[in-house]
Image (cartoon, rainbow, N blue to C red; front, side, top):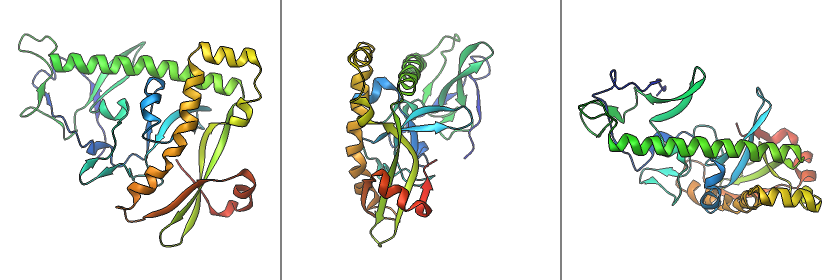
Length: 258
């Protein structure tokens, strides 16, 4: 379903209510979900964290790799969400924060199945004031914005230090088919180890060194994609990070992640 985000307005939306959906069904078609730096510690124990390049803006974004095919989130099943961690970018829905002139405003997907006037948490009280539920959503959105600002600083530091390298995944399916997944990036541990003491100390003081190792360590969660794929139409036998030499030797099999 197409999203229809409109600015949240206490007059126009005074009767609106929002239902909670613990299954996070709205994310079942999202194979890449943005993850902010303050979530890295928990996220790294649940999902591979990768960098995705926005070619149009020539910049990178951090995302959780929740699936290997566009439109398929392997962490979602008929039983619901299959992980102890869900990024704020999934939890915030049907709300979002977007530019509105020179400031940021809260938007709501008015066409969402979670939004209506019958069931759910009210957004505004009878006197027009914000409900406790909406206050909690506002705090979440504020935390998310602040964390994403720091994430952008983190990514800029990685780029400035030339630490970003492409990661190619070799995927072997249970039926014997094989393919490569490209368009993913992460921190180069080899380049990281070549930084001088001053550069490493700066990363540490900015709180970015721990974030780097969280991203590197999170690649161990590729096994979760194998595990969760067993209930899908394309069960996966194995996923491995390919050495550059092997990846470049089979370019015709490559398929872009995003």
